[in-house]
Picture 1 (cartoon, one colour):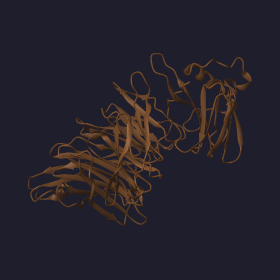
Picture 2 (picture 1 turned 90 degrees about the vertical axis):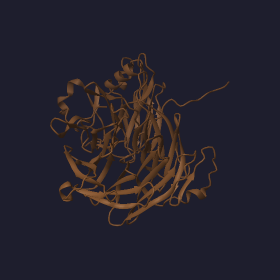
Picture 3 (picture 1 turned 135 degrees about the vertical axis):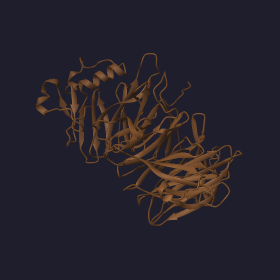
Picture 4 (picture 1 turned 90 degrees about the horizontal axis):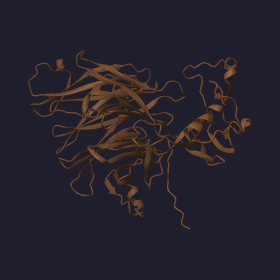
Amino acid sequence: MKVSIKGVNISVGCDRNSDTADWDNEFIAFSSKRNIFLLRPETDDSAAQIESVNYFTYDQSCINTVKYVKNGKNYLVSGSCSGSVVVWKIVGNNIFPKYLLHKNGCCVLDVDDAKTPKLLIDEKMSFSVLRVAGLCLPDRNLFFVIACFDEAKSSNLRIWKAGCSSENFAFQVCACTLFETCSLYSCDLTPYNEGILVATGHTDWMIRIHFLPYDGEFQNTVLVLSSHKDWIESLHFSTVQDSSTFYLATGSLDKTVKVWKFYTTQQQIENDAEEGLFFKINENEKCYVINDATLVNHEQAVYGVKWCPGDNKKLVSCSVDKSVIIWKYDMQLNCWCEEKVLGEVGGQAAGFYGVMFSPDGQSVMAHSFDGSLHCWKCDQENWKSVIMPSGHARKVRDVDWDSRGQYIVSCGNDKTTRLFGWWKRKGKKATFHELSRAQVHGYEMACLSVTRRGELVSGGEEKVLRVFNAPTSFVELLSSVCEVEHFLENEDRLVAGDRAIMPALGLSNISISDDNDDKYNIKFKNGTVYFA
């Protein structure tokens, strides 16, 4: 008898770093440890699902950053803790490592050759990659990749260039610059005039602008922008550019977002100081830069900022204050205003680490400290939350099935115990989702077991076993969402109260019934009560 096996679900959380997720074409790409995942957003007949996963065989370290290549929808760039800068190619629903960029050029990685020489990997840099970005220019047959490296006592920016007319790209290092007094924490690039502009954000609160001509030598730090009062954590060039004006958005740990306007003029300006900062493109042409706006409404550090594709009058920012703000330029008021504030209310997450628009600009996705993905879709004037896959943000330590195979429970080093089951909807494909977070602990979880129906035993690193019984609210959820028979009537002894809460400073859930809320002084305040 033949038996076939196929994967039906992947549950995983995004890494706790900025720029570990990006959205372009038809997939959301994000990293978790050494893996890169492709997530297909929600469709009319199915919820969002992870389609593919892959990793770089010769690098066991964690991935720090993932970015789609601008204008190259089938390519991504990643950077790892051990110094690997890898260009990935998307083929259908799968993703494969294509090129390894190193200090002398690149190695072409053959996905069909499992015996890629280890010698090729020895050429990679030996220090951590903090940020990467890529740009493809099909009309010029050029491909650029930039990466920020963090060495022991300094940082450096490295730029690779390749012609993209042939099947395999021949990347060569065309620029490398060292920063000894500050670290690099963000970077982006954009085509400009007869070359590319590179912006880098640093720990000395400065934004440095560099210029690389298509046929010429790299011009290091042609301009320094100083207005922030803390590290520059994120920056992004606008995707809409005319011949003379474009924008750069920057987000900082000083809680602000700044919009910088770049514009070119061929007119002779007598007093350059009145026009702001500038750098020369050629003898007769200058590019001026002014601080066009400072956006202030976040209460904590800003970790992500992105422009809306096709619209340089709209951008989105996120912060560890658990908010996502969509900003839009008001032509009548001649200023930037909040169009919508999204985010989380309550909970234990430490806010958002990255945010982005969908390619059509109608959706916004953010990833948070606990690894969860949050997505909102615009429905006329309202933004509605979209169901996204979720999972552990760190190592999974143990899993166990319910005795009847109706749900599965897992625990891990992210200090959570999660329950997954089938979500069955009429007229739509059944999908596997996280239904409940049975335990949020103060220690890393080590083991668990579903001892009988509605009963769970878990153990953490503090060497204490805890027994949990399913409350009425969970059993009703399981019955309605997963179409599981209601087992309260026959096994009432396994049900602990109507629901469960976790005290703000506690490690164990407390059983609560509708008639004893006053006994525990239950109040719905941000961050004080959590229901299982």
